Length: 202
Image (cartoon, rainbow, N blue to C red; front, side, top):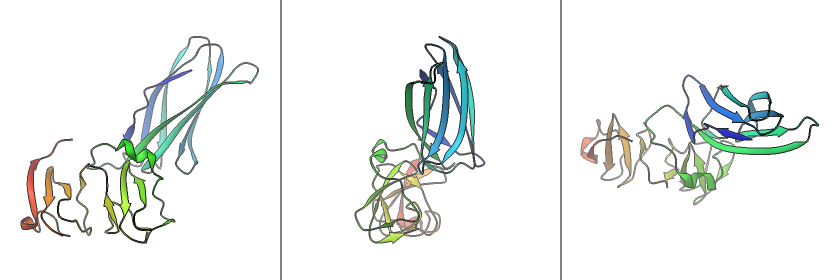
C-alpha cells in the first residue's frame, strides 16, 4: 500500500482543510484511512475497496480544523480480514497568517497544551515551531505570551500585546523587522525601536 500526496503542512481556511492524496495497493485489499489530531481524536475517515494494482484519488475534508500536529493513519486488510499493512504520516495544520513553514525539530517536542503547567526551560511544539518557557506558565499561547520565547530560527508575525527582546525578528505588513531593545509596540507605533530589514518573502 502506498499513500502519496500528503504535504508536511496545510493552512486552515475558514476552519477547514482539504487533503488530496492517492492510495495504491498490491493485492485485493480493504483500505481504511483515518485522520487524528494530536489528542488522538478522529477527525475524518475513509474506507476503500481496492483491487490488485488499483489506484484511487481521495479528497478528505477536515472540518473545525485546529492548528497543530495531526496524523493520517492507514491500514490495509486482505479478504480474510488479516492486517497486511499499516502506515502513519505526520503533518501540521497552520493558521492562515504570516508564518513561513515549520521547524523539523518541533516534532521532537510535545505539543503545547492549554491545561498543562510549564516551568522555565521546558520546550514545546506550537504551530510547528519550537518555543521555550521563560518561567512558570499555564494557558498562555506561546505566540502571544511574554512567558515564551521562540527557539526556532524563523520569524513569525508580530502579535499585539506581546513584548519582544533585542534581536528578535517579526514579520509586519510584509516586511521583516528586528527589535533594537525591549519593545511591546508595533513597528508602526514605535519605529525607533525596530530596524527595518526590508521586504520579506518566505
